[in-house]
Structures are given as structure tokens and as C-alpha cells.
Length: 640
Ligand SMILES: Cc1ncc(C[n+]2csc(CCOP(=O)(O)OP(=O)(O)O)c2C)c(N)n1
Ligand SMILES: CC(=O)[C@@H](O)[C@H](O)COP(=O)(O)O
Ligand SMILES: [Mg+2]
Image (cartoon, helix red, strand yellow):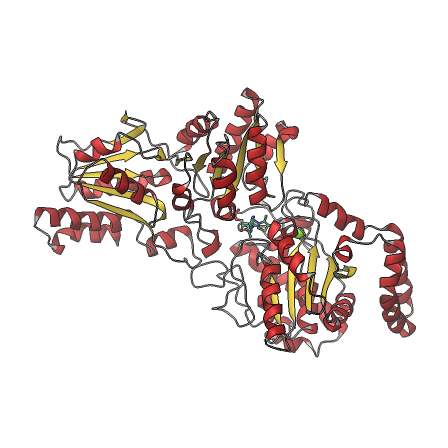
């Protein structure tokens, strides 16, 4: 009988023999490949933490002890060992989240998938335990990539101060974020990892002890105990110890016995301690181990035997951006690019290959990226920082007070803007057009198709005295949406067919095809509609007010929070212009959205053509004083 199915909670691990533990690890790897190859997800990171997670749950007693995961994308094994083994709808509607989830389990604490926060959480929990005299261990697992994030060091600075406050920090060092982790920290971890004498000694010892099992185990334990002294002798003093943190390691992150020994020692230590574990992203699955791009960090459905994607990659917003950046790079030597540890995902690989001196990977450090961009601009270059919309949230102050206040010509390219869906609440790019509305001088473009993305990116990099933003959705770029004519800086996508039209429909970015569908549905209700794409949604185009004035109602539709988004900005601009036309704004409701496909989420929040057409029909009918629900039956039918 498979061992995995016998594990209903962490304590079921206690009775397994070392051989059974190794077998369980193998079963888990097989399970992960079989399951995640069907659903997609973070296969590589989770293959790298199988033994580590088993050892953690044997040494610590979750949920009485708190086991915390940074970013949370590597918590699949944690879920398997804490009573959640139905991965059939992983990241899908009604299925398991791809990240820890308090709604799923008392074993889960941190739900957000934004990196570098775990040490902050751990610091707070450890302080609470100390103050409330609670006997609870706190264990924080942080990747080498997440350690490049500034917040991790803010927390470490606090953690290192309290020598008597127990806290176990497990550094899951697989030398990669997506690509190899950059920077001085990565180099330092490498020093700790690759001290030759220490490594050779360790390997030789293990070899000898494996041959002498009787003497081996106690001797291995003794040497493990001696290891610390030995490492000090042959390995340089690590910066963690310089900070005042006890350091244990490096530990073979795939050796359950070694891990348990180290974690047990760390657990007994009455203060903050770092356990430095060496793991391999994608371990045990050859297609992942061979993948130099990102070791299958995050995948869509694949053929399990080859690792090849089930669906061929189609032209995405990201690839259109990446190709245009290479052209721009050739035309302008002052253009440089920045990524926060996501070179491939944001589409800058081709630019990096073409201009290796003009690409800067800053690690998972979006705040630093924004400030460094201000420096680059002040130094005479035009930086393009490509980042997922949701990850720019943490750099708001740097955009405001470093880039905008100093009128720096920096272009922020926000990928994954709008609803992303299966990565859950913290990944939707739903706040950027609200958050950035308050930044003086900053302009925001929302292209509706590939041609507009190219055009608006080029317009953005022309601005040298203020920040510009270009934001677009995740995934396949939509069909080309031609303009009928230009009004001011805006594109009219559809004429109303009458000189006294009912509705001015303001279509933001990639929602243009849906807005044209809304106009067609309204046509069937006898409601005439002009569809306009503002192109640059901030500042609101001066031609918006006079255009609105020629309509009976204005409707805005955006893939952004309704609060403080484009709808609010247009409404305010009409009021400021003295244009008294009713406005109804459609966008993402101001709440956290559960994971599901993008289409399922859009339906659930009513951001669909039938839903919006039905509501606009009701609105216009009210204006006519002839509001009658039966009139909207056709639209209801269209929706179903
Ligand atoms: C603030 C933030 N920026 C970027 C990301 C995207 N991201 C997710 S996982 C990851 C790499 C994490 O590397 P590491 O911490 O070493 O974990 P590993 O995947 O290697 O286990 C990145 C950059 C994120 N989740 N949060
Ligand atoms: C965990 C994390 O933040 C990333 O791995 C993210 O899941 C990638 O998202 P995409 O799949 O949209 O690139
Ligand atoms: Mg890593």
C-alpha cells in the first residue's frame, strides 16, 4: 500500500523507518510529477523541498508549532503531509490553492504569494510567543531568491537583535529564483556552500559511515556535532554569524537524517538560528533538472514523460513587449532594462541576449529596482522596469518619491495586469491603475492589442521628464482592434450610427473586444453606443469631456479595482469640466478574489459583456422612465 495515502497528518510520519521515509519521498515526487503535469503549477520548487518538508514536519509539531513558507509556491508537499492530497483541481475553482490557505488548513499561516515576507511574520510570531510566554516553535522557510528581498533583511536585523528569542530560519538554498539568484548574497551563500575542504570532508565521511552502519550512525552524529567546529575551522565566518545569528550548515537538503539532526539542534537552541539547506529545484525529475531556464519553476500542463508543454506557446502580450524592446534597444543606446528576478517571465530574455550590458536583474527587490531606475534616468539613461503589476505594489513609495518627485524618465511595464486568476488573490494585477492615479506627473497607458502595445511603449520611452506606465494582461494577446478615428489622443473603436447616441463606452486596454460585444448587445436593445479607447488612461484626455457631453450616459469598463480606477478618474474629469452626464463604472470589486481561471473570476465578478450590457440597458431604460426587466430578456439569454 502506498505510504503517502497513510499520511493524514504530520504525526503519521513519526512511525516511519528511514527506509520508509526515503520511499515516501519517492512517492511524493511521483505524485507531484503525475499531478502537476496535469494541472500546471510550481513543480520545480516543490520537487526541491520533499525531504526538507518531511524533516520539518517530523521535527516540529505543526500546527502547535508554526511552519511558515516564504512566497508559498513551494508548499505542495506541506499540503500533502497535512491532510490535503486531492490535487486534481490545484489552483482551479473550488480546488486547492497553489499557496498556503487558512481556509484549507490550520497548518497554514501566510497566504500571500509576495516574496520576502516570511521573516517578518516569523519575527512577529516569535515576539508574541515570548511576550505571551507561549511554548511554540516558529520555523520560517525562505528561499535564496526571497532572501534578496529587502524586507527579509529588515526582519533579520530585528531577529538578530534578540539573542534569547527562539526562531528557526530555514534557508532553502537551491541557488535559483527562476534563473540563478544574483548578487552578493548569492555569492556569499556559495562560499558557505562550496568550501571545498568542508564539502570533501563531508562527502568522505558520509561514504565511510555508509560502509560501517553499526559504528556509522553514532559516529555520524558525533561528526555532525563536531561539524560546526570543523566548518568554522575550514569555512569562512558567515555573515549570518557576523549579524549575531547562530548558523547551522550547510546541510544536504535531500538527506532526511541530516536535516532532522540539524533541525533538532536548531529547535533546542534558545535564540534565532539559521539552518542553511542545500536543495535542488526540480530534483528527481529529469526534464526539470535539465531545464536551464528555470528548472520548471512554474509550468502549464505538460507531457509527464518528456516535460514538453501540452499547448504550444501563442503570441502573448509578454512576447510582443519583448520583441519590441529588442527593436528599441537597437534604435536607442540609452534604453536599459530592469527585472526583479523574472527575466524570462517578463519577456526580457531576448533583450538581455542582445544587450547583455544593458539588462539589470536586481533580485526580488522591486523597491530597489524603482530607485535604481531613478538613478539610471538621472544618469542619462532611459530605464524600462518590467514587472508584474501586483509586485509593483510594494514599490509605490519609490515610484512616488524617487521617480516622480524627481521627474525621472522611467518606464514601468506592468505585465499580468488585471485578473490573473489561478495564482489567487495576491497575484491579480488589480490595484495599479488605482494606486498610481495619485502620482503627480505619471502617465498610464493601457494598450488594447499588440499594435497599440508597440505604439504606446514607444510613446512611453519618449517621455524623459516623468514616469510612464504601460500595463497589459496575462497570456495570449487579443485580436487586433482597429480604430475608426482618433479624437484627441483617444481611438474611437465604434461609431454609434446616430448624432445623439445614448452611451459613451470607455473601453480600457485589453477589454476592447468585450466592450465591442457590449455595444452589439446594446444595439439589440435599441441603445446606440460609441466605444472609445483612451489609450492613455492617465491623465484623462482633454477630448473626453466634450465627447461625453454628446451622450446620455458614460460607461467605463476596466480590468482594475473599481475603487479609484479609471472610472473614478473619468468621473472626476467630467465634473471638473462641468459635464453633467451620469457615469456608471465597471471594474473589479474591492475584495480579494479566490483562485479560479481568469474567465471564471471575470464571470463571478460580473465583468462580462452580457452582465454589463444588462446593467447598462437598465440604466438607459431608467433614463427613459421605461425601466422594465422583461426588455432585457435577450441579454439575459445571451449571458446564459
Ligand atoms: C515581491 C515578489 N516578486 C516576485 C515574485 C515572483 N516569484 C515567485 S517565486 C520567485 C522566485 C523565488 O525564489 P526562491 O525564494 O529562491 O524560491 P524557490 O522557487 O527557489 O524555492 C519569484 C521571483 C513574487 N512572488 N513576489
Ligand atoms: C509564485 C510566483 O509569484 C510566480 O511563480 C508566479 O506564480 C508566476 O506567475 P505566472 O505563471 O503568471 O508567470
Ligand atoms: Mg531558490
